[in-house]
Image (cartoon, rainbow, N blue to C red; front, side, top):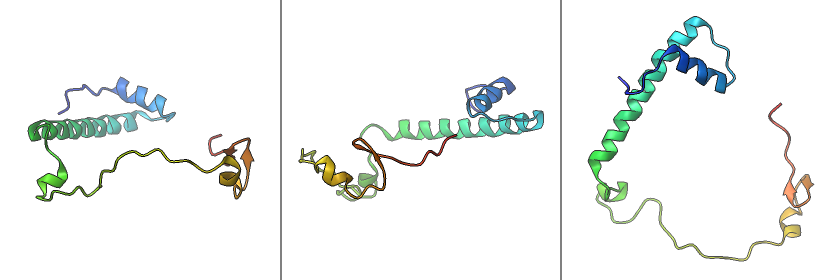
Amino acid sequence: MSRIQVDRELVRKVADLAQLSLSDSEIGLYQERLSKVLSYVEQLDSVHESLGQDWRPDIARGTLESSTPERPDVVVVSLPVEEAMRQAPARIGTAFQVPRIIE
């Protein structure tokens, strides 16, 4: 089991942060599920520790090239604001205006 003690109060706090209303039976269900998730995450932490600091997935597969190639950071000139915003359907000053999704 997890080193973190998942009790009903912790589940209530997490539910409050997520703005969820849970019944007593749901609190019990999520208490068990949250314990299992934390236990699994702790297992993943121990795997990382056993691999050492030099471990990389591309080297572990026996290839020298990374599947995500690394490149140097290069400063480039960006588009002028007016050109970048030309096809924006709506804008506020120099920013794109998007529909509100949180009420």
